[in-house]
Length: 115
Image 1 (cartoon, rainbow, N blue to C red):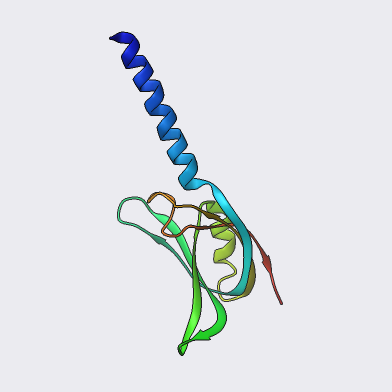
Image 2: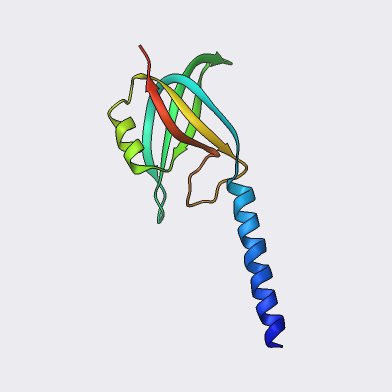
């Protein structure tokens, strides 16, 4: 019985680790350029850092915006100083994020200020 419990615990941990890695695996990387229009910390208990960028186009008469999440606090504070400016944001897109990571599947990894 003890051997069964140990094997079951190891199997459960392996399945859990695999599931976590599948959900958070960055399957796409890229960048988008636009004006940073919003940064916020959202959540009732666990605060996540979120943002929106105006991409400059119109779809059905509505400005096209792109929502993203930020994991790194230092990067969040750097972007706070650049709100309203034109930026090129680099991101990783994951399969599906957990609720404590952010509201979106796009996570900012870096930026460049544009003129």
